[in-house]
Length: 378
Ligand SMILES: NC(=O)c1ccc[n+]([C@@H]2O[C@H](COP(=O)([O-])OP(=O)(O)OC[C@H]3O[C@@H](n4cnc5c(N)ncnc54)[C@H](O)[C@@H]3O)[C@@H](O)[C@H]2O)c1
Image (cartoon, rainbow, N blue to C red; front, side, top):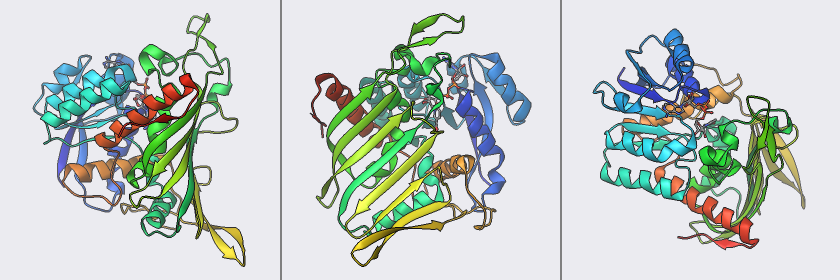
């Protein structure tokens, strides 16, 4: 099987998820080029030590990502760094001629995102995508097929979101994701926004106008020394967005991105309400696909257990269940197919979609500040 030699820049939470997905490539029954992690970079020795213990293909480690990029034995990079580093590091990766799977928000702000897209214009030979794994749940893939097949009839509205509750613990210490200078002005929208946009944008629904409600609920948190410091970022965001589909239909899409939603643990969902029927998927019931049947003039919700019917076939039988790490593996397999020049049924979030994401989130910040709906530039 063909191999693509990878460097990882940023060996934290998400870097490890990639290492785990690469380690179980045998799980896929489709023949797709295998990522082989040969080089790692992190400023923290401890983070790299985990990789040295668990990944036996590593031949190089460094604290300076430029040394990793200078290596001929690195074909592609997974970059999972704090947001303030995306603009410069992603551009350097692309300019070094390496394929890139970068992380959201793909630039700390719109200006940073534009720099990354400029670098890509000069290097069209590299494949660049942004990580977004939730749409790969089989039940969500089923919902996407229903949209493509027009089974909802005229779409009336769409609700989509991702919510967490761990910040409800006011004693949870502050980290970089709650600091504007590292996480960015977008706050929770930068962290969570792309997760909610992947399906709507891919369905060709373009945001035209947005009204944003943003809340900074926990205004202070403890730092590592136990001192209370300002916690400036937006905790919760709700965007009411007027979207236009390729067929000219317009309907609202409600985006919910919350760090403080009671009871939610990485809860991602999407619901499409149409005139003919509606359907929904949520990671709180990960194997279920819900849809409505008309019962006379009334509608009733039906639940089907979809099981492990993944977009890219695996060794797991369809009678079993699918979870978060399976979604990560599917996303990686889709990215590797794109590197191979193949077209997966549902591809990874593109740089062009990230540009749209930044236009939407920049407009959302203005909307909240000026307390009005804001047009989104075409
Ligand atoms: N796809 C997802 O579901 C998902 C989930 C969480 C985070 N993320 C994204 O992943 C990215 C990283 O988040 P994380 O949660 O893994 O963060 P993290 O803090 O766990 O890891 C970041 C790593 O980068 C290292 N680092 C910082 N500055 C560096 C530098 N200059 N050079 C080299 N290494 C450096 C840190 O030491 C740390 O190990 C962010 O863009 C975040 O939005 C994605």
